[in-house]
Length: 443
Image 1 (cartoon, helix red, strand yellow):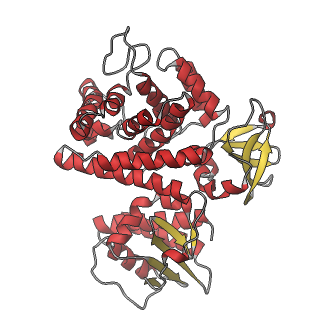
Image 2: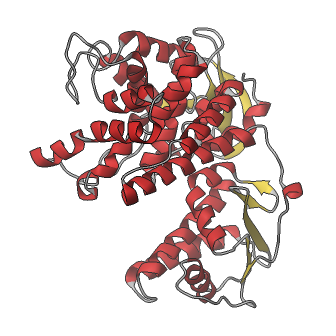
Image 3: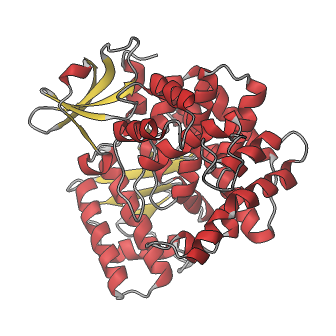
């Protein structure tokens, strides 16, 4: 069973859990979700066999093998399983539709009981810490998850009480910083993780990783890098003050809606200062200025002779890059190379030209996570070339016939690239290749 198949099954299960929690059995949306789970189940459960999916230590496992990308993409679902006391789910062929509905109802807390003799068994197989297979990037992944959790906690507190505690965010960013220092290439590849359902959380953590990398490139010391990272994680926290209807509005905003949007930098800065007090001015400045353009335009208004702080300008570059490469409800994702070109076109007006050049030097013309076509198949860039114009460190993931293969390290020369693919179109998740990086010729 591949990680992609397992991810499709977990996604379909989570969808049915959502629908069962909202609508009765027989509702069209519930039956549509059941059909999707039925299809995913048939793909992963072998005839006459069974499949065991476990959730432990903030990760999903197939037997004892960690599912790294699935664990990140569906991290919030792991918490929901923990709340219901579910550590493992065993699906035994043939799986019935009624058992699929029963497990979804139980997980949705719509049913207090769950049949113990059906085709889906809960907590029949347990994992212990000794059973888990550690990987070179396990700690980096945990730091990413901790940052997501901290941001969820902050957002929930802001919506409930209008204030939050700063300490968990600082601790999470410190962990992310330490791990990215020792695994710089892996951290850049990890920053390609996307979540359409929880865009703001994943986007903010990705912007933090990229901003920390820019800061290291220009020689900023750790004592200032951590506040920059905190500011990047919290740069959109002020959106909790914006009506949800405005944030999710699919069309062009009217003047009143736009005014509601433009207040979020000020609200975010004020919330950070209230939570952190002295010493968090850098983080508050980043939140306040992340939409202020290099030429003084943007919002909030900044005097044209007084540019945004250099730390804010670094986060603006990271923020824009991740936003462009992420699919939104109103816009498709673009390739990493397209995002670099957009930054280059805006250098000197929207973005600090020196920081744009630094960012491009750091990422290379084909940044980590780029999915490239060449004559022998499809490869994913896992780190930039060690020398300008030199071969790219990639993993070959698809052959010339279009078949997925086990990732193979491959030094791909830029001149041999025939085209670029989007993750959503290719069915390839770059961050899912993290566990293969220790075999690739990367630093």
